[in-house]
Picture 1 (cartoon, one colour):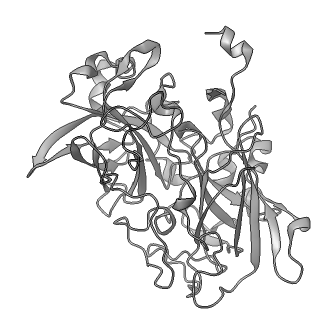
Picture 2: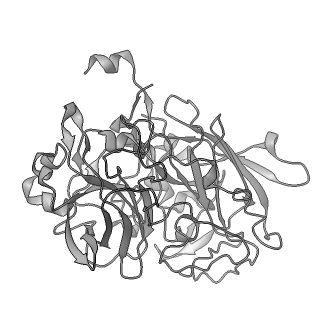
Picture 3: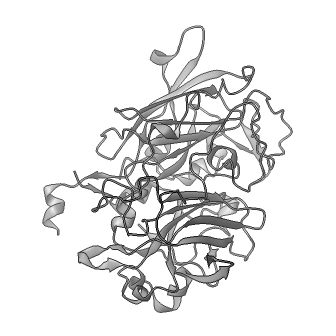
Length: 204
Length: 235
């Protein structure tokens, strides 16, 4: 038995602490400059690469929108480098953290503005296709659930060492599809927590 | 130092589906989770430095014109990994109800007063020894709709980062001796008694400040332990 501190649910009221500028409804603190440290816009002035938007709905087992979820994403930069000491290569975009947080709104929708990540090193020297690690928290989730977002327009998906561990008929739940909104590519990634077409979640 | 994140350590976590906590019924995955190796994407994680917090972010009693009502408390402790090594320079975020058991969030309609001098959110970065410290007021218990006459024990929500995205933890800190423990399905979703007790802070007489504030200590152990020579043999 391990000695780690157990997880508990994020509950319904995290927004004013964790995602103060999100679209979630809360009463702002008028007297104190509670700045947002982690937001849904990851784009920094020095971030190179293709700017993209990621959007989706979070849905429960009845297909109803989850309007009090929090999504966190973790990704490499456009060159496939993580802003972390363990990244095997140095980071080129000093201000690009690759980490973002979005609460869902009343329709269960979240969104991020970021750049498309590059391919990153994988196990046994094989590259991983460009992807984003996605973590979901909400009331009714006693622990976070992890998934991954892959891009439909990436040829490397078929050889990706993680995606190929997923049964073929469920792999599609991890693929975000592109549409254009003016000049901006928007990738849609719905997260179905339970039921038919349930998103693949990982035991990590 | 290479850290490993054994999956077995998660055995103390609650099950995704815990029907006594009703909201889990439609919000828990029904298909088996797929086991995947830990790649660079999981073994890395966001790093937040001291620029992420500003002075006063760790004192929830000084974020308004006046002082909040309630029992002033100090909450402090050490963030560690599974080898009990300190985790320095990591972001710790908290949020909580006010002393009456009311959150400022619009969705909270519990008919208890809001406190104009209390928002209830704080953040800090652990020091080089993994220590953090907050000043706040003791949150009140509050009713919720899970079952008839359901009340949450007093708690403070915690969000902690650690060395990688695998060590990311969202949890709740409870207070010792709470009479609501036996009736709370969220607290009891952790079925191992010792693990459950690790979510309960302990009264820390030594660090109370006489004539000013009581103190509670809450140490946090995150996933991650050092690779041993035996581990290396397995590769």
